[in-house]
Structure formats: C-alpha cells, structure tokens
Image (cartoon, rainbow, N blue to C red; front, side, top):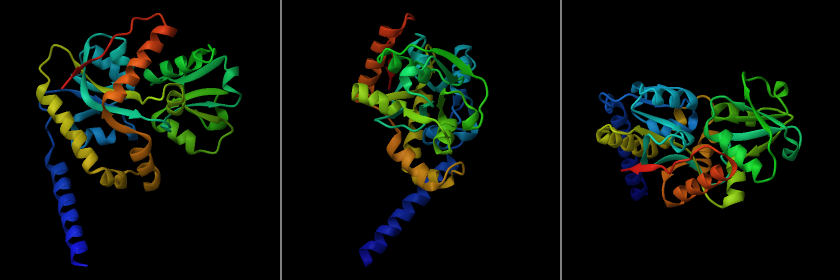
Length: 281
C-alpha cells in the first residue's frame, strides 16, 4: 500500500533526524553545572546532555546544590519544599498518577503493625511521603536508615526503597508484600504525586539553562522508544510499561494541586517549615 510505505518513510526520516539531533546536541549546558539521578525514570529528561551531567543519588544532589556546587539539579521535591532558596523549572517533573513501581514499602507484616521502617538513605521526598501516608492511618513508626542493600530475604520486615533498587526488589522473588506509594497517594487524594523537579539556584541568570533542560525533555519524549531500546538494566517490555504508563514528565495544574496537598499534609504531620515552590518558565 503506497500510503503505508510513505508513512514508514516519513517515520524513519523523522527518527533519523531526531537521533542526529541527539548526537549533535552535546555541550549545550555551557558554564552551568548540572546534576541528575542515576535512575531509569530520569533518563528522558537528560537526553543529549548525558556527558555533561553529574549523576548522584537525590540526597547527594541536594547536598551539592545547597553548597552551591551545582547550578541546577533534578532533585527530590522535598529539597525545594524545605529550603526557600531554589526556583523550580515549570512544566517538567517526574510524577505518577497512581502506581509508580519505583517508590515502595516492602512489608512482611501488615502496615498497621509497623514500628520501625528502614529507609533508603538516598531518599528525601519518599520517606516524607511514607510518613504522611502512615500518619493518615494513625501509624507512627520510627524511621531508620537502611545502610546497605541486601537480598530480599535479608531485608528488615519493613523497608522503603526508591529508584532502580525498588524496581529490582519488585521484580525479585521475595517474602515481602509491596505497598506502592504512588498508588497509596492516589487512593488518598485522587491526585498525581510529584517526586522530582529541576531545582535552579535562585539569583542566577538561568534562562539559557532552562531552555536547554526543556529541549532535553522534548528530545527525550520524542525519542522515548529509542531510549527504551538502549536500556540494558531491564527488558524492553518493562521499560516501555514503566516509562509510558507508571511515570510521566509534565508538571501541570493537576501536579501542582498534588504538590499543594502534599504541602498541607507535611504541615499537618510535621513541625518543619514547608515553603511554597516558586516556578519559573
């Protein structure tokens, strides 16, 4: 069918152009120092910038940003809610509407019996999300650091994991049941949850940087299937399901409503000052 051949030709031409753009879009960050997380869910947001970005766990990124060793970082949203010193790039985030699969509580016993929860030390936002979700059920455990990863059978009865380690745990043979925090949040609020945003150092002219980060997102979404095919840590089917169904990358009105609700619950169940985020285009 001629029209089908023409559509295929146009699709291949567009893909070739996009992949060429990936190869020619290096060194676009200029003098800016930028960090991101080394997790699958962040890959589409750094497309074409990979060789210029520092990859570290969320807590380490927040530390470097606080010390002015980075100009921008894709950080846990808690980093901008508990420190009134960053701007947030509008329109870009890592979020979920329901099940997320990479932020979870593994539990051998009912969640209501949790007295101690061991948490991934890389986490900033997720441990606070878990805290408010449990508090809304009247459960107030002690949160302790999970110092090292182990085989599922060697983990404590209650363990919170994020990112790729959470996915590994989800896919492994295990005794624990899994409480997906994205699902729990949606059940509680009916809203998306925002896990990470681009935090920008306030007081710095970041307009060129913001443009580069937006372009990276656009390129990442345009070439998402190619990104998925190049990943080696999980198979194609899982990566496609995860990056197209469980997480999304926009920060719109509903995501901001979710953030507002999270702020309300953080204030309700905590004593630390929580700040409204400042969004920049």
